[in-house]
Every structure is written in C-alpha cells, then in structure tokens.
Length: 65
Image 1 (cartoon, rainbow, N blue to C red):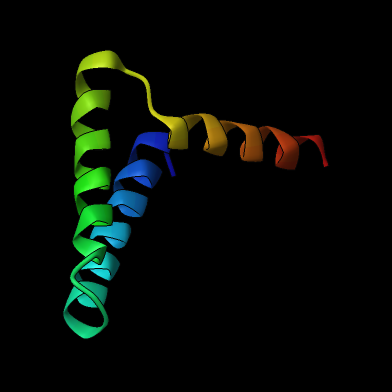
Image 2: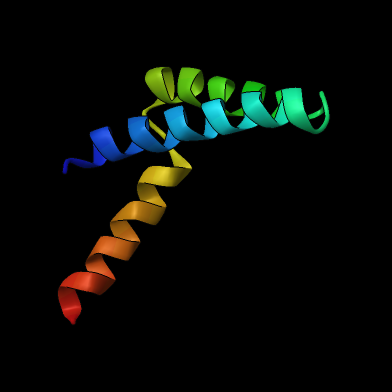
C-alpha cells in the first residue's frame, strides 16, 4: 500500500474513533478530531506530514530485516 493511502487510512480511522469517543466518553475528544483535520489541511499546502516521516522510518527498518 502506498504511503499516501496509509496516511488517509490512519487519518480516517483516528477521526472516526475520536468521534465515537466524543459521544461515548468526553466531548474533549473533538479536539483530537480537529487536530487531525488541521494536520491534513496544512499538509495539503506545505507537503509536511509527521505521519509520513514515521511511516517511512518504519518501512525502512522493516526493509533492513
């Protein structure tokens, strides 16, 4: 799977989980939803995504094995 698709899958999962937690646990989880959304928005303009860096490092370590 391409890194771009992995990022979208992570972001979608985090958003859905935080929305569920905001309904079941505390409304403060909506701040996490907003953080993920803002990070996606800024990465569209700046092409900087912390998750992309993490995924590349993980995949580089796995390819060394």
